[in-house]
Structure formats: C-alpha cells, structure tokens
Amino acid sequence: MKKIAVVGSGFSGVVIAQKLAEEGYSVEVFEQRFHIGGNSYSYRDEESGVMIHKYGPHIFHTDNENAWNFMTKHTQMMPYVNRVKSTVNGQVYSLPINLHTINQFFQKALSPKEAKAFIESLSDKSIEEPRNFEEQALKFIGKDLYEAFFKGYTIKQWGLDPKELPASILKRLPVRFNYDDNYFAHKFQGMPKNGYTEVFEKALDHQNITLHFNRVFKREECTNYDHVFYSGALDAYFDYKLGRLDYRTLDFKMQREEGDFQGTAVMNYGDTNIPFTRISEHKHFAPWEEHDKTVYFEEYSRECGSDDIPYYPIRLTGKQLLLKEYIELAEMEKNITFVGRLGTYRYLDMDVTIKEAFDVADKFLTLKESETMTTFVVDPLA
Image (cartoon, rainbow, N blue to C red; front, side, top):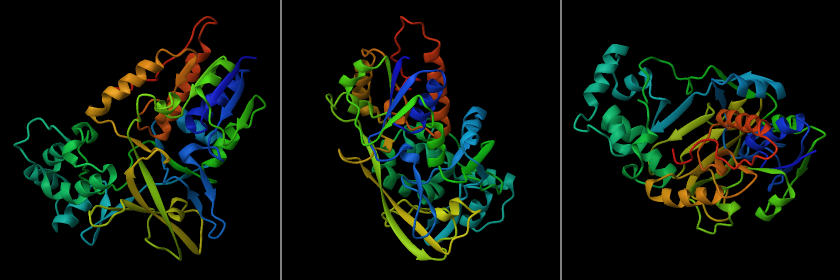
C-alpha cells in the first residue's frame, strides 16, 4: 500500500483521509492538538450538559449536496435556522438587515417597495466606484445603517479602519426587503445532533487510518510518504522563513448562569465602547435539548501572535507579496498538496472545505504513477 500523510484532522484532512483509506491507501493523520476536528471540535460540558463549540459557533449551511451528504452519512443533522440579533445603542435588531430591521431602526412601517426606495434615497450617490469597505457600504445602504451595524463591528473584528479594508469584502447588498431573518439562504441548514466531533470520529474509523495526537509534522518527514496533504499553516510549513502571514485570532471568555442568558444563540454588539464582538449562548444551537443551566461566551478579536490559534487570514493588498513568495516556495515542493483554510490562506466555510477536499482526493486518485501533485485547490491570490 502507498503511504499517505494527512496533516490536520479538520474537515479537509478527515475527508481526504477517509476517501483514500477507502481506496486502499495507508493513511497517517497528524494532529498537533489533543483532539480531532480542528476548529469545528465540540464537546459536552459536564456541569451544564450543553454541547460546546470550543472554537466558536459553527452552523452548517450549504447548497452543495455532496457536502450535506457527507454530514448526514456520519451524524443525524437536526433542523436549525440561524437567527442573529444585534445590540446597537441599547436596542436589539435582527440581522441580516431586513424589512423589520429597517422599520424598527427608522421607526417606520414601510412596505418592501417603499423600503427599497427609502434605502436608495439614503445611499451615497457621490461614490461611483467604491475604493474600500466603507465606501462600498455607504454606496449600498447609507451612513446610518453602516455606522450602526457594520462600522464598529468591523473595527473590532479586524482591528482596522474600514477604509483600509477592500470593497470586495462587502460583495452584495446586505439588505432584505422582506421579514426573512434566516441568516443564511442555503438549501441545506442544520446542526449535528451529537456535535461535530462525532462526524470526525466516524469518518476516521477505518482500519487503514492511524491517528497521531499532539504531534507537529515537520517538513523533512515528507520523504517518508508517497504523498502529503497539508492543511496546516502555509508559513509554518516553511518554518516562517520569510516571515509570518497575518491572521486575526479570537479569545473566548466563558460565563455560566442558571436558566437563559440572552434568549438567542448569537448576539452581535456593534458599539465600539463594548470590547467584544458578540456573545454566543451555546444551548440555543441545540433547541431540541433542554438545560436548566447555560454557558455563554464573550468573543474578542485581536491580532494573532506566534502562540495563538489563527482564525481569519488578513488578505490586505500590502501583504500579498509575502503570500506570493510562500506560494512560489510551495510550488517547488514535490508530492505535497496544500489544502484547507490554513494551507491555502483563505477563509473557507465548512461546506466549501468539504467540497474542495473531495475534489483534491478525486484528482489525486486519477494521477498516473509518475505524476507528482503540488497544487493549491484554487488560486490563493484570487
């Protein structure tokens, strides 16, 4: 059997490991943490009985049937609709901005057509081609909604003035002119009944898969395998020889209470005088369960240090040169494929990660004996 190394046991690594193991390959999975699942790891809190998303909320949503089928193959998916709220200036509103948000915020009773015309009247028509995030928002929705729901939250989340962020971040008009407060618009939406960890455990339960925990995979070990699938940080693979790529990391402050703290799973805080970006109350991610106690987390975003867990890549134009240099180094490697959020330095939803992992595994299985495969799934600079 050919020997395969998979670095990381998040969705990228687990999908690839399972697929190749089923095809007869001998797969070793290296995980530097004490658990599988990457940032999607979940566990049952002993004191409250609540299922906790250790690294922040993960709601599964997709239009990709293969990604949904992967989940339902390994767990029972329960119906779940993500209804996000936002506290601004002492008032609670629904997100994404919808007809109820507009009417409540401006103290009106507009119809959909009236609301469209009203928002259009608020937009900054002096901006023809938005140059940054702020201008894009002002062109779309005007000053009042932008400052209430986007400006402060964005400053706290990214540690940057919105004028420094590219306009492409805000790609679509973030407004619905009906009363739909479902945060996502995908065909399949849900939560794993027994948490995400069950998915990873079942996917890795194969005689051809060997797991190594608390184990950092070194570049020089690649020669021990016929091929390596690397979902760790791209710059870490090269021991940061060119410098570190920029990430934001998150800190979570856990709180416990009796009963119900906020009555919803996610509450955003757009005011800059409140240091955290949102509070997530995890028992509301499993509405089919009942708990007398509750656990909630204040979420703080900051610059990622050398000992922190990287969450969000900061893909600013000024940093693209360093990324390009790392990509050039990666393309010189042999028999290795860089995958996932960290390996390709992109923010990826879970379903996209699953889809791309299947694509990578399928491509690998079609390679001829003499071919090597060193590739990014898509152009990381796009």
